[in-house]
Length: 315
Ligand code: ADP
Ligand code: MG
Image (cartoon, rainbow, N blue to C red; front, side):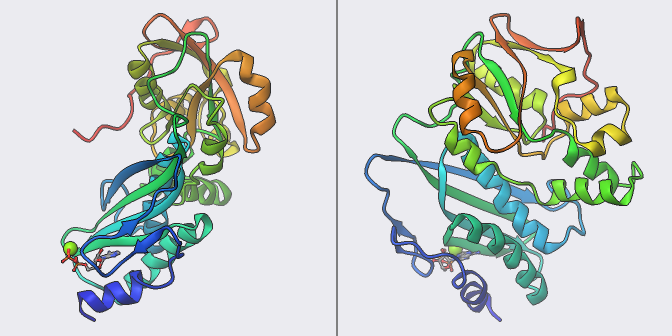
């Protein structure tokens, strides 16, 4: 198969179609329509082999994760994902690899009805860039810069699982079968919190998805909003796998600094707590409070806890 056969066979078929795509794959650019009253939310995330996923990750998981991390960014904006483009670079075009990669990608694309409207296919180090586009009603996007003093801080799900999964894959820790499967799935197949993000539109004052660790990502909200925060570590939601395989201090450290969980961290004024309870269908936990004093304080009851390392940084 040449490049064009590959595009046609793997990427031009199977993906959900939508009436707002006037022209999809096949021309120099796609043409799409944004509904009246909506803003277009756009984000791109790149996954490089050996950096964002270990070598030997199953191609189906790579396809799944590449879309999941992008959906997570739109979730954090409170946007509904609609379209994507895919820039794929691989050392060689291997049919079996492509088939499995596309299957993983399709799984999430079908779940959220995302159209693949274009892309680029090149030879090179295995690198997957997905650009995701979605709609959010005017003025309702969840931003990082609007957390308010006295807001409560919440997270969805549990934290640190993906980091524990990575440690397991790297043979740095030996987990029992159940915990191994659970944490490695959390790493390879993160669940984007798209529905939660959408339902937070008129409730949260700020939101971010946790890709680089809670401390680092909450830190982005604090910096952008020019506020500080205190967290109570005993409130951090930890899975059974985290609780049974790590000391409490190690678990806290991983929950605060390990990336790849793709849960949401968001802030809500106390007078909207009841509203929040009503709309939330997924697990969520209140972990701390926004304060006027800048910086992030992680408290072990009255004592400040010292982090061993802060979130992942590329450079
Ligand atoms: P151009 O030379 O204009 O950049 P390409 O030859 O790169 O066009 O791509 C041909 C068509 O196939 C374009 O419409 C492009 O958007 C689409 N395409 C290329 N690679 C991919 C891909 N990996 N996924 C989806 N669409 C793709
Ligand atoms: Mg091109």
